[in-house]
Image (tube, rainbow, N blue to C red; front, top):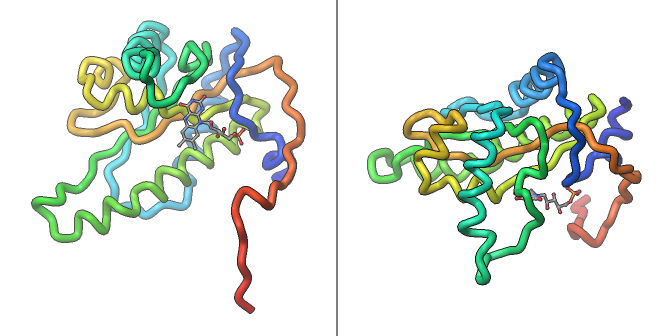
Length: 188
Ligand SMILES: Cc1cc2nc3c(=O)[nH]c(=O)nc-3n(C[C@H](O)[C@H](O)[C@H](O)COP(=O)(O)O)c2cc1C
């Protein structure tokens, strides 16, 4: 798919059919994460989760936060939308009590995370897959070591962001550029 087409066809998709992406396609998505423009002084890890029990465990944990009456935000369920593949990016932050440069390092972690997730979403789109960034199940596992273990987060790491991928029957219309989203100024 042409890159311009990829940009207008990528959309957060919340409905998946039962078709499972091949290992080869999953690997291409993972490779795109490894090609992302990041600095390499953060300890990061990618977990590819296709195990339905692990997915259910994470969704049950998310329900404790997002399924209650005073939930911070209401999200559709199931939280991972029956997508067959869930990819979690985790990392180990620098200890700000031990390392004087830790805050500087930790502050730019978000940039790396965004680059990695975005590369995977764009690659998924290019491969004809649907995707959606998912934070509900990420924040929910923060204090749930058994969930972290079940989804393959390394010891001492925290889940930072995640993306689901799969196939959809939903028609995704071309998106339009919306200048009101982010004001732009030019200094010439
Ligand atoms: C940091 C972040 C967290 C998100 N978490 C969720 C989530 O937990 N569940 C969900 O359905 N969508 C989630 N999304 C998807 C956003 O809702 C979506 O990107 C936004 O509505 C814009 O839609 P678009 O991606 O189709 O342009 C997340 C997106 C970002 C960037």
